[in-house]
Length: 124
Image (tube, rainbow, N blue to C red; front, side, top):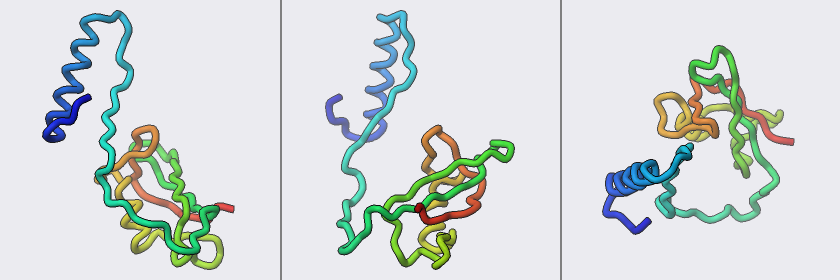
């Protein structure tokens, strides 16, 4: 796709492509993703970072009748560990995870949102 002036332009062009495609094929359109690159400010790796250290957070899926989903965070900073293998869901960790709550702007891999986060723990 050519560069567009704004997000509305990208969505309109993608939608028009889907409409034109439907007119010429008997197959279905299962998914259409729009990837916009380089929209976040890059940041450097922290000196001495341990790339093998990650954490897994578990939360209840919104309208999931008690089902849970997990989210893995690679390279979690040492400062967030509680010393017993846990990662408390407070401060900057909570701010980050809140983006996946129902009121947030981000979704987990299956398009799920989280009603509430239960726990976080350091991966072994």
